[in-house]
Length: 387
Ligand SMILES: Nc1ncnc2c1ncn2[C@@H]1O[C@H](COP(=O)(O)OP(=O)(O)OP(=O)(O)O)[C@@H](O)[C@H]1O
Ligand SMILES: [Mg+2]
Image 1: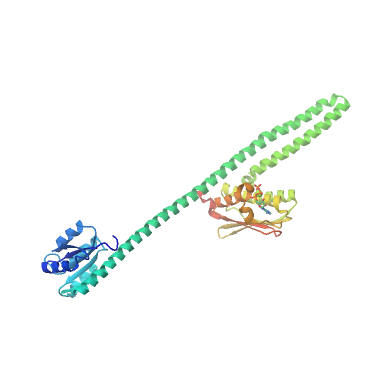
Image 2 (image 1 turned 30 degrees about the horizontal axis):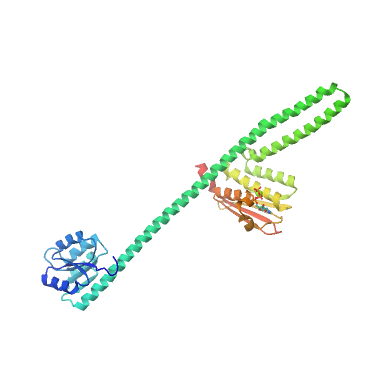
């Protein structure tokens, strides 16, 4: 209903003269419906769904005005309820306030100016209530939408996290399988080949001296090459799947990783470990291992560092893993905002893995001041796997 539409008033009055007088005074301004008893008024109220105000005489045969307005209040709280009464009786007033939640009392005989003012104020109040109700409904609607959107967002995040974990597990399993194949099949075949060259060499022992020397030197070259291949295959297999984690535990695997790293790249490293038994899930251990491995790879490939400070701390159900190098540093923001096709995947993979654990990754770096990588990982990241 807009502000210029006439409001609908239900007037309840058993005295015909009073009723006619009210109608003649206000029929221009309001749409007035009449009832001559409380019972009739209730019937009309049920038939008409857009009544804004009910004005009722108090003393009527049958239902009193207060009783009527109490019923009306129970059916629709927002309707404005006004009592018109000839005499003010305290018990009626108390009942009207407590039960009927009356907006106003008007004492008979009423004056036109006063009645006009009361009706106009009541109309204003009714319109405000309507607007308020509409706004309230809109807010509830928006809140419901927001809650649903939030629930969907939460569910997608959870689904994404689970998907990442399954992808990670699947890839690790696949790498593990390839590593085993490499080790068991290719490694063994190359070892056999090495043996065969030795046999070949022995078979030529009876040939001429010159040929013997030639075969011998070739054979030595082939053996060296094969040894190198065997070594490469071993390294490849080890890098693909750090079997050592499952065999010796995460602490030993990390120590081993660092020993290899410092030896190969001639970089010193101080390692401050903490007991890592709290990480019980296989995935958790693998992820932490991969995080450290990728950080070390970046240091050897980009940092030109001579020293690394590597520490693991456990505090209030959180792991803090820190790797600090003294290398040339880099502009973190610039690298992270490069288009995906113009940068490597190391940092992205790290960030994804930390998210899988519900943790945080922070990188601090400055030109010629080295780089520090902080991983914060909650203890309970593998609760789903344990459950
Ligand atoms: N410790 C570090 N010191 C100096 N620069 C670093 C360091 N770590 C990362 N960077 C810089 O950040 C860039 C992005 O690293 P990221 O690991 O994402 O990719 P990448 O190492 O270049 O390639 P990928 O990891 O895919 O082999 C690197 O190219 C390098 O410029
Ligand atoms: Mg990298």
